[in-house]
Image 1 (tube, rainbow, N blue to C red):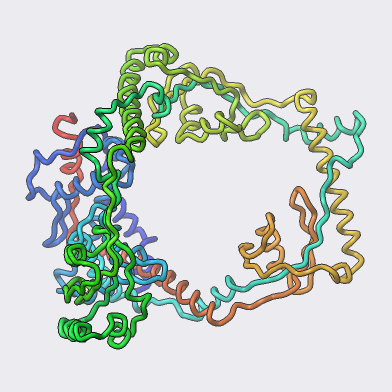
Image 2 (cartoon, one colour):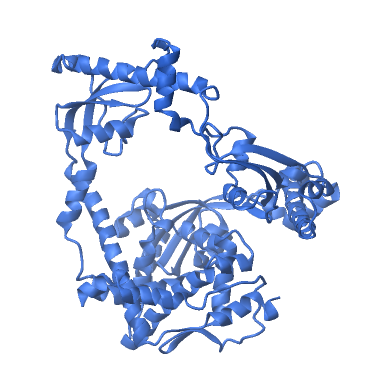
Length: 623
């Protein structure tokens, strides 16, 4: 059974489960989220005694669409499969909830605290848990502390169930140790370099160069090339049109003054005790004259750095402590206050007053912000009008003129965005080619047809009209004569330089007597200050000690000798091995968890109703 569970993610059962989850997701249409058609009793996902309402799935879909998908239209998100992903994830969570209800598996406060302290996203630069980062991270994600802890409970419960099997499927430590030793080994090399100088090569006669061209003629073929007309719309397109009045700036300052002000900050020290009795005893000791730091050192073994939270804003502080800290005067002792982490004592060392800037101080900043916002609004206003015009059959050039815009011609680029010589464009052409979906759109639309409006990100859009397409073809010698002479000289220079290095290498080991070794470096080349570090490292690690090899970089020929092998020290091996082992076991646990999902989908009779969520998302009658 264990073997079948560990390979479950690759098994037909797992594939059936994934296909089952994907079933019913042929989605189309655009619309806003609406909760008017189904009540909380309409379940989109059911598993055993557990269920998730269609409204909850729709809310999760919309949250992710806005926060992680740059607020793309609902219809586009549906077509991209976001609903599939959301329902698959929520279904898996629900299956484990159903199993936990059956087995009476619970998440305790101690488990919560332990799991929370392990989250690296909430660690400071020293690797310690930071309450400030915890609170600010939740705020950025749009989650309350209760929401996060609810999600954490589900994760803890799922992990307990999965661990009941996966703990017996751990990788041996010797495997991760050997892997760590292999990766952490370092080497030193001695390098002798020879410059490749094509300009020193003799000029070939006509017969020689044409013969060489004939032998390499395919290298000079022209790829298929297209030229397109482009209409590009971005906030920068309207910089000259946007005007912001003094009244608008003042109104923005009145309504959004906090956006342009500096919040009050406080420098805080804090220590946390497991019980209220311990915290009270510590408070009594401080009230009796013992220094805060001394109590922290004596009772908790904490250093000065351990208890310093730094200077924090109100939003950086744990919700349970924020009011107490920001209502206290400098030097005031606060607590004990109960929080998720225990019983807190804190002291405010310094109060750094905020700065509510006056209007004159931030007027220019407000002007820039408002101009950018207006320009973005204009982009979307124009795009709607452009789509309407194109839909009515208006020519692209005329559309541009109607809206005060200009088109641009981009000539002769291939499917990879290179020019006829296979070289990358530079300047404005390079910026255009790098736009999201530009190449794909330019090569998928028929000649003379006008594309749909394409979102290129950052509130920018484009429309292309392919004008011409040139088929791939051989190029004559006269077209590429300059390149041919250059390439011929380089090839001969490489051959000559390799021969020189080989001759020099035959002298023997004495050629390295006055050559210093490099600094130690890893297999990836990290630690080696050389633009060809990766190539040199690959050579150094594939040959034995005191052996040498010739390599060519295109600009130099190098003789690389492995001069020293430095095994990893045991401390490095121990630390890295622990990381590798955790990652290997994590993969094993994930595979088992996926396989368990298959089993639970059968035992708890998983049911999915994506149509309910779809109707909520696209609205009645697909409006």
